[in-house]
Image (cartoon, rainbow, N blue to C red):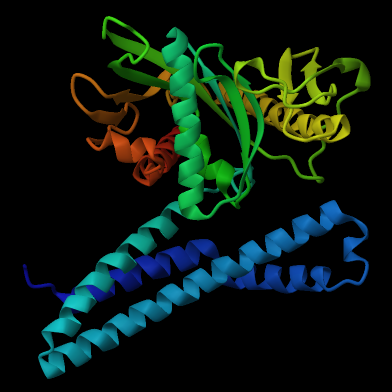
Length: 374
């Protein structure tokens, strides 16, 4: 093993940490924690449960941000002490442990550095993810289900709670579409780089001649709205349809018309919900997602107006953003960042952090380039 220059490595760690701390603005975070703590201690806090949930969730997140930073600083200090002791005593086991900890701290700092790049208007929000089967028939429906499992496994790996809000099963296998929430701070900013068209190339398990099949699925990621968002939808702009929830193969899983479909007439946006047992609950959940989608449409319109004023900035994602090739070779490649891996099984099992990190850095680079052209 090559000898490690620990003093230089520790200086580099401290430099990275300081830059992250400066961007994060710890003093502002602590001030916000004090303000939120005061709100959380109010005796009438839970008179408005929705508002209380926002306050307590934000407080918890801000506290975890500060704690994460302080723990990393302590780990760097402890590493320095471990190296000094190991060198003084010629302890190879301590030096091996220090090398392992150095790698671990580097990774933790890189993850934290990526979070500092999430500075978009809605990046801090929780996310609503919708996956739809595209061209490719039953293989596309199966691919949509594979992608849903991939993202749910990714969330599970990170301990992020998820709620499947709606699933529309295909006739033979897989999903026509599915919608689920990822309930974690910065879920939208993190997962928004996954939005776009995904392509799968493999030997089709549904083709009795064993031919290679290319299929597509679309991923949509929107921020979950909060009470402070001003998105009001007049009743005359919404058509409401109710129907019975159903599972795979059309088997009834609910004997009442509890599932709800909302259609926003001006935009044609359709949202279906069947996760809850009551029609009222499904309607409330569907309205929340519809408002979230309209919020994103509003932002996109504003961004388009700004872009028109600034001129043509080439920073589009394109129709196809990632390929998953299972045959004739094994590879997952992001066509925007050029990041690729050969372990397709791990990726489809939720190991997508490197793709997400590369996507966030790619997006930030494009935004910075666009800003420099202004």
